[in-house]
Every structure is written in structure tokens, then in C-alpha cells.
Length: 373
Image (cartoon, rainbow, N blue to C red; front, side, top):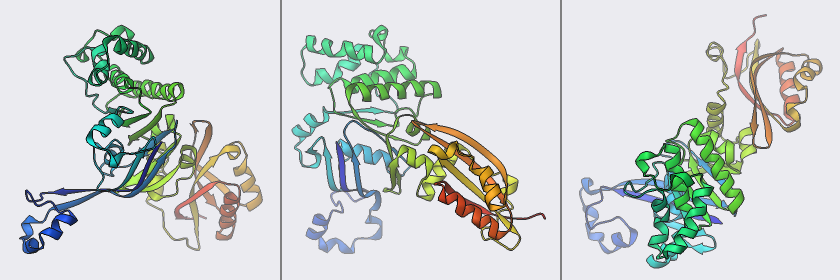
């Protein structure tokens, strides 16, 4: 449904008026190469050769730190930001090759909701939702036929005549969602759609988006810095950093075993499963003759209910000191997490780590601490 191929987006800041630094321009103005250093524009590579695909009917999340390129990526999908290079295909249509009129038509099939709602304060709920249809030139009867079911779908039937100032944040976002659906889009883009909402309201909006996805078969692409959003409704997740996609996986796989250090940091921040500060201060990177490892373990599937720790103690001759543990439900999967010290000599503890890895656990050695014996 959405495919980005080798997409890059470069911003040129402080470029002299009339002298944009495009290759064709430079070719025609080689004589200006001796311009002063103060004329050199600042170059920001917001996206770098991004390849990205979202299948029809799925909910795909994009996460990353502030400034990673998330908003630029999603705005390139409907060409609110035009890529510097690369291809953007939405619902089989190459977006970058469309004329202005064709692009306006294509955008009718791509709904978008924003963090701050962007409602018109002088229009009531009904008229805000009707706006896209009015701009498309639809007749009043057609507009009413479309708006009324959307009011019901989003739980706003009794708010139709109220104005944005009379609504809560969650209600405003529901209006924005209904407005985005008015033109019957095939794709819904969500740009930090829950960031301005409290946790309870966020949960209700995510439930609404999940229902819309299931009832309408709508493909949803959302960007967020909130792992709870990804956990709650996404099927797949992509991690972006410095304008590059660094990791992509099914949500269950990402939460169970992220492949990159940045992915592990996001997961650890979300799960808040870190060793005690007093222990961190004692951690050494390399093992010594009288040290034992501190490990973080991630269990999933059958491993969650298997008594591996007790078996580990019997079969490997180590004692296990559990420092922290918790169980999370990630959609239809169960994830168990644990931080533990493996107490034994070097040979025993290495045998224990090997044993855990052969049972499909994700094992991360956080460091080593001196034994007290």
C-alpha cells in the first residue's frame, strides 16, 4: 500500500536568494564557486536512502528520538514534503510524478491527523468533518450521508453542534479522525496523534484507530516516540535514527529481541528494567578470575512458562540471584524479562549462558561483578 524506495530528503538552510544549491543550478553557475564562505548553505539530511513498505490493511509504527526524521518520513508519503530523491508509491500510484491537480486528487485517498488537531475554531464538529467534502464539491445531501455515520463511528453524535473550544483533547482528536475519514481514504497517516493526550484518552484513541483499521480495512502509518502506542496497536514497527531506518520487525519480535543497541535502549526505557544503581557502579566490562556475570533475559512464547531457572541451577551448577523480573503482554504474545546474577565460577557461568541461549532466550550480558566468596 505504501512503498518508499531510496528516498532522501535534504534541507538547505541559509541558501542565498536565487542560488539554491541544486546540481543543475551549480552546473550553470560554475563561476560562482568562489563565493564567500558565508554564502555556503547549511545542509541537513533529514532522510537518507530510505526503503520502506507498509502492506495493505496493516498498522505500521515508526519510532525514534526527536529529530530522527520521523515527521519528515510521514510527510513525504503524501508529499507535504517532496523528497529530494527517490520514489513514493501509495496505493499503486507514483506520487512524485503527479501534476498538482493529480496530487490533490491522490491526497483525497490519504487521510492525515496531527498532534494538535488543526480544527477550525469557527466551525462546529459537523462542519469540521464536512470540510474535505465541501472542498471536493460534494452536494449537501452527500455530505450529510457521509458525515453522520462518521459521527457515530467516532462517538461524537451528541457533539455535532459544538465548537472546538467546548471539547476535550480526546474529543478534538476524534473530530480530526472523522474529518480525515470523510473523503474515504485508503491510507491514514498519524503524526504523533496521541502525544498531546493523557494516558486514558490515549488508550481510547488507540482503540478507535484499531477499530477503524479492522472495520474499514484502512492502512495506518503512525509515527510516535511512545512505545506504549506501538505495543497497543501496531503490527510492525520501524526504528529511525539520523534519517536512516536502522531496524524493522514484527512488534512481538521487536519487544522480545531488538537487534540494535538503540532498539534495546527504547525497550529498556519502556519496560524500566535496569539493574540497581549500586550494582551498575560495580559492573566491569570484561570478566575476571573472580567475577560472575549479570545478565538480562528476555523470554517469549513457551519459554515464559518453562521452569528454566530451576533447571539451570540443577544442570549447570550455578545459583541464580534474581534482581528484577516482570511479565508483559505484547498483543497476542507474552514477554518475560529478568535481570539476574549467575553465581558460579567462569566455566559454570559460561555453561549457564550457553544453556539459556539454546532455549531460545535473548541473553544480554550487562557486565561482570566481583564475587564475594
